[in-house]
Image (tube, rainbow, N blue to C red; front, side, top):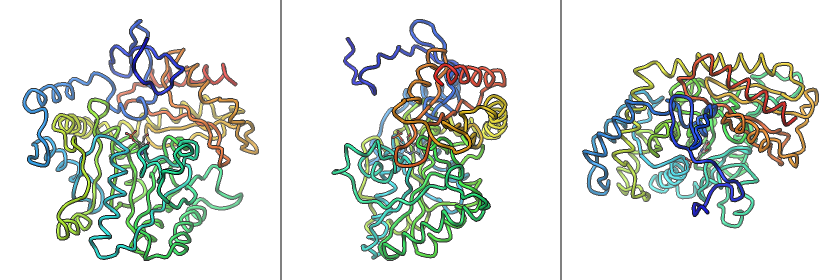
Length: 439
Ligand code: PLP
């Protein structure tokens, strides 16, 4: 009997033994095509020799040095590399161990910034419904996934939620995409005015919504307007690129496609590519300067902040992405995946939408295409498709629709950037079989 406390208590998962390229192998030798990179983690695939060598060399030279006393060369080099390519005036990198730590740190930094700036009345955070920003108390409060939040409701902090920019279900009949984007963004200004502009500290959003909507980018113009509104009211813009960052969408940073830059940016998953647990919060020079000139101390910090081995892995991953043209490859293979999905599901009676950017693609299931009506969540379609695909040797990331909206079940795909055309064919064919077996 296992003593591991698993994610799902009544599921007995096979033991993963090894990984190679786009495949994982379990202890019985069965191969699984990693069609979702776990959860948009494994951007380089499995067994990347360069990253393994970097991790081995670093652990042998220096495994740990507490950042209360010392910094380390890999952390310094990785911060330099990220800032050299980061959008806008992002200037400082705060390393953490994962996505929830990055978003939690972002929320706390926003609050401390305004306290030190002499605006302690700025305490409200605005985020969006049908979003996910992590599982710690602050990050969970920011997220808009009702199901994940329900048991913890009495513990959560107050956060306002506006609608996501979700063209498939929320754009009105006859409304242009541009008009819809402006209407969706207007919700932010309305909420800032309702709360009182001088009380709002930050707005947090995923540029391409991952787990909760299934690879949904905003329409062009939405984030430009969001940026303007934040600037107008002195509100910090926090972008959560934990899932969609690090080349996943065909840009190193997803917000590049929207032509804007945030004040605070969160990354994780693809940064360590699964080789080490690492995340990061990048902030603007202005935010950093305020803390530096004020207390000089961010009232935060975990033991493993800036872990040298994790930073060495991140450094090797980002160098590989940049030096091997893998971000452009994510864009190109993303086109190929999107085309294969359209070919397989374009006329499917229960596929309402196919969307995404780069190798971050999603399909949304509907009971009926015409009305876009979702299936009854009680059918548990997402879980059943996940199980059928896994049985057939495909790892994909189906998620149930949220009960608080009109959203149907969706399937998120985020394979390694090294995926070949033949493997895209295998992915789509196994996915089609899994959907057929369930619907
Ligand atoms: N933010 C986003 C957008 C995510 O998708 C996730 C995880 O799925 C998180 C934050 C939390 O990251 P982690 O699971 O590494 O804590």
